[in-house]
Length: 337
Ligand code: PEP
Ligand code: MN
Image (cartoon, rainbow, N blue to C red; front, side, top):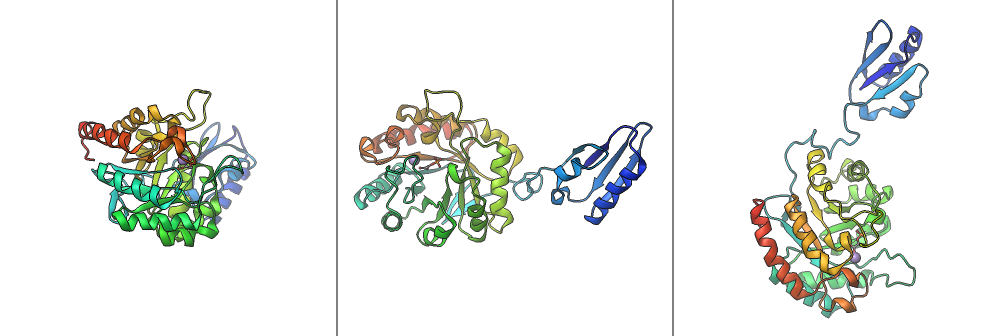
């Protein structure tokens, strides 16, 4: 970190800051110039309160040189991380497709979907049991009954399951049935949830908040990893923009840029990213072309009858065709499906 003092600032102000930095365990090196003093600070600056330092008397600006996240940054871990979800490896050469309905509705629906997406080449079954719905009168999910149905579908197919957890008090329950816990966009900054997921060792799928920056997403991931759980996969699922024609704007810039900043795997969700069934295939392919480690796609045996997110849900047959089309794209970018 570099601290730039105001021009012609008195030496005693510089000394006060040096004292403070030493107390915090840092090694400050003052460089006295003709007009101003600059203090180079050696040590892990992430433990310092940068805003407080910047507001100290005599300080003009504080320039951190390290990213505010540590465990998830590529600086600290240059190789890509591979996250193991009950034997399915995310972040390696194979692009991993998670598919299934937005909500688990009944046994027949989830088992039929699981069998079909497995046959088409999906590696993980998705399905919501606890649903974060915009309106309180919308279908809220089957809760524990839904988790039991997901476990049945896993037993029938061998596919690991991913499902959302919305509150810290349900982590133990959801982890009993699921192989991977999803943090939804609306909960990306629920810090109590993130902290408790750090103490749970199950892999976490962390979806980007709909108005979050990359830095906020990576800091959310840092909460989980810093609390003891390194198994985090990030997900781009679209953000709110001025574009009214789609539900969200799928921000594919995130994939290559966050890959530069972090070693964590990233998947793309073209279903929530577009909100429109006919666009899902194109954006799924674009996601893989951009370097994503996988996809999450909403699929239902009768999409028009889906109890949530029907407009963006594709049929079993559509999913099958999409998987065939994806093979060429994965190959073109040096990956497998
Ligand atoms: C979902 O996956 O069904 C979901 C609610 O996603 P998001 O949190 O991205 O809106
Ligand atoms: Mn959904």
